[in-house]
Image (cartoon, rainbow, N blue to C red; front, side):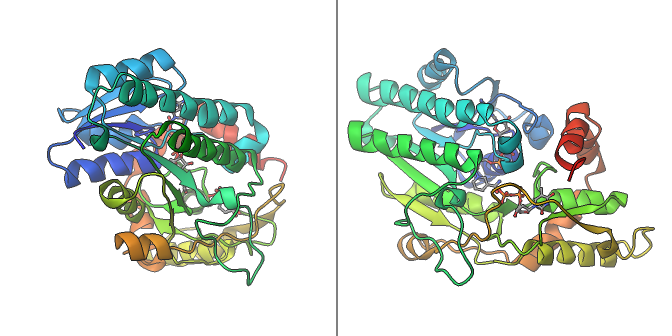
Length: 357
Ligand code: NAD
Ligand code: TYD
């Protein structure tokens, strides 16, 4: 890979991947296309401001003209597609933007790749790749005791978010079968780590606990997610770019499957150790059970045999060490935190999602 188009590279996983790839590939040039929605944050890329190997473009993945011109002007040979609306709760309150960005946006990128690589044949066929980043949520929900999802599990999405991601996965796969576009897809479990927007469970609980605000646990808190440290996800995607087979899908997961309540208690314990003089000690007193999310998926678990055996990837971080690092990261970034929490759109989101629970 030489000229890589990364979409959504100002968001959580995208920004981590931009850093990862710049370190891993000394000659790569990155074109980072991001619309800077509420979830995009230039602070996530602040250290790359003067880096000539990283070109940042503010723009929408649904803008066909813009996307075509990026392919043309930068001779894009690799796409790593992260840009999306990514939060389930927001998809419940406003599904339209999820259809637009996640489905129409993915379609727009596929069309640009098809035109540049297959119709105009700008680059040798064996040098191009479209990697689509997706989620385990396309598989629906598991009951306790049911086996983890494999790549062959049928799709059964439950939220507008997961339905829009499922639709985009189907489109990506259809471009492989119909046009021969060299695609790969990864379906990954819940990520956590540096730069995650504090609307998701782990950073929200860390920041609320630090401020002595309630820690809102939906329903009974016994839902299970398969947590993966974000750097492990970046390594998996990089491995797929290097050795994945086109037309294939790879499941990625962390082999860590605690309940939400266990996660929140672990965060509280870490904060108790790091901040023993806090007026909010012990932090677990802040836990508050609130109304459940509609259609709340009970359990996610990924079978990662395929990527482990075929590509030799394994998660490196365990949940305790990963959470330790993550809490430390948020504790030592008060300015990054304030750049989000002081924004009016963030405060009004918090009110609209939590006020009536
Ligand atoms: P995020 O919400 O933190 O970031 C999304 C980024 O996409 C933001 O920078 C935003 O500005 C950008 N964006 C949104 N709409 C855009 C548009 N129309 N045009 C250009 N840019 C746009 O998301 P994330 O958590 O980093 O997730 C990245 C990808 O990984 C998503 O596709 C998501 O479905 C997938 N994923 C996320 C997780 C997770 O736990 N966060 C797990 C598995 C898969
Ligand atoms: P989230 O981080 O939103 O990821 P996803 O819904 O994509 O899995 O939520 C993770 C789990 O935490 C999910 O079961 C919902 C739950 N949750 C809470 O209990 N309270 C909260 O305030 C949030 C944001 C999530």
